[in-house]
Length: 370
Ligand code: 8OZ
Image (cartoon, rainbow, N blue to C red; front, side, top):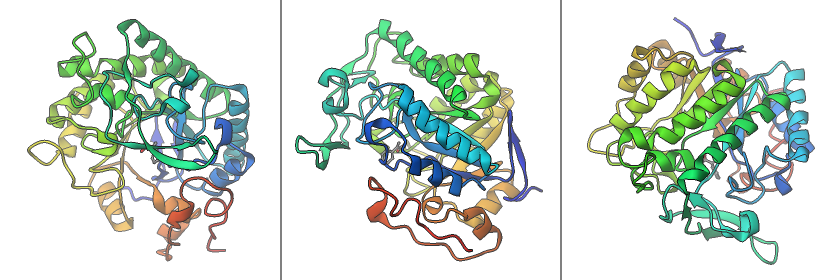
């Protein structure tokens, strides 16, 4: 029976252990360019079996928050090259999370101050973080989006493809497509945000079509064995809602299965909250989802996430519930989390005040055991 500290092959990625660093938004990339300190931050955490970067916008239209990084301008890619070089120098593996926020944005962040785009013109009851007219940080309501025209969708799929290619060119070992937490792909999936009457709305098959288009384009470009996906079947994050997630995500599993992915990464329950949170009438059956994926021929590592501690993680891997476990907040405060878990060492506590925005404090200055 494997343990948390055994190696794992995930497609083309050979992981030294099964402790994954979850994607964590830190809002420390002014002008969407990861600064030099970001290379140090990820390199400090390179003993993780796999690092998944913070969500990274594939285009300016995909931006939804102040100071989050991008993957579409040369200076952004140079910033990421510093990161991948630093992580590889430490022997780590790193994939970038490809992000389009859809309606979770604000006109002030969009090209020419336009409305954000979404499957339908339904505003999210959600906040985002921007710089106001005086340059001060402010939490504001997300802007009402406009519905994407059918003929705009292939262009966004191409944006994902281009970003995947740029990621490999910048030295990443692969990509994780962000299909979770109420952002664009998830907005298409869930009926609460998708009221389309064309081939991308209505039935489960139609609502999952955009996800399939994006995943096939990325896989065609860089290979399934360097591609993963993150989903969150029941999270209410960013006003995500669907009354019947079990059949919806069973279909998603069937769409993903033929793509020979490196991994599927699942947020169980409410992102950053209760793991047993659910939407719909019954508790979500994650084992059934995994079984559907396997029966449909799905490959790669099954990574679970959300508030796991060492004993939960060992149990999940020992029972076959998962192949690897992603840790989020504990990795911010503990660069040497793998060693601390292995040695049952105490964990540093997270400083909430330095989570979003700022410089080195609460970013690169958390102590290791040495
Ligand atoms: C926290 C703050 C802003 C964005 C997600 C990318 O929830 C995020 C995010 C998290 O997936």
